[in-house]
Length: 547
Ligand code: GLN
Image (spheres, rainbow, N blue to C red):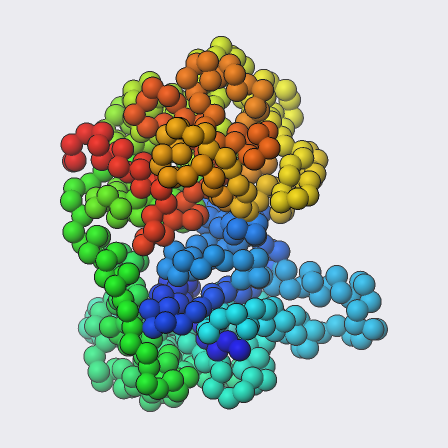
């Protein structure tokens, strides 16, 4: 039966709870344990699939097709453990399950209440897979005191009570603000946050204190005293130059030791941190820099393309080079020539996206990359735009476009080189969809296999002809244009196993031009960079001498 670590946050949001959880997962692994990480989000959306990337950052997709919070991406990048549907839940999902049961009559006429019905549903969620790992790390989204969060806090309190003693611990993240005027770190917000937790029956075992300044021993002792936590379980967490420093930094600060102490595991197994010292060595000793232009739509919020930014960093680690990604709003190229913006970059990436806005600019970026021999990686919408560009400018399909934009505009303007997919095969069954279906959870989602053409560039990069990658899209390149496009040098080098769905295209006589219908960035890890990102950065590095 797994031991449970519940991770909560206080004082302010965005303290890096997800990162602390992920780093703790990595450290427990380094000590030889198996782990699984989970996220419980108090918001009322059933899942983040319908939330705007501007508001909530990227939607992370799991192999089994769940649309989840971007923290699950951190969990995977730090532990290498593939997340599942059962690793992410929101209040919306919990309530919708409860209401479904109520309608079915499962509660036998009882009055449905937050306690016990909602809290039971949360506890059932927590218990899934409890026999599979040594440690289950469960992060509660939001901050203690949030109204929506209360059922989750109550559920973890009950859960810990129901388990044998010593099987669950609570870790709480807070902030120590610094007052420049008096030159002091203030502990009061942390005290209040712990007081709030204790008022709902939760006593933290480990306190992680974020601070921009060194925390003097005196303050640490004070926090321990006022918050009823052992002094060596008050863990300082300072700002880091890279998130990948977190496992080593938290280890130095004593986090994993404090957690094992709280479980009374003694002696603690010795950690093997070589995976993280190697990552840090590559980060610290990178030679030179390559600049990659990411031409997208959600450019104001960096979290909107979180996994892409990380996968580019991983590609840099593999090539021992720093990757500087710069985000350019695709709409600019609808008014202006892209050349002055793009000519100083060693590579261009067009990421995924939804809706027509900015797409003509992305098509211009793809054209620039193709004509000027600049390495190009098109992901999902970025592949679709590259195909439309080739159809228009090479194959003479002048009105080439995507049905997505016609559907959005409610009029037929394009020849649908990219069309709405209504039926596809998943494993051994067929999935069917209609235009106008609900938006939530109805895309082609999760891992699908693809077959790569032997001798193609992608087969060489992957070192195999059979791959599995994660998808999240509704529209698809129409295979009926294959012959016309291949005659013009756009090779369809990766296809779905039934040969119906184009998964990868590449431009034949080009240094590096690849479009993929899936999201390779979701599977990249710092200690195992994704082959496409590794080779894309290699091509960027080779393009010109390093700047
Ligand atoms: N909007 C496109 C589709 O639904 C691309 C989606 C994406 O880039 N993830 O097919």
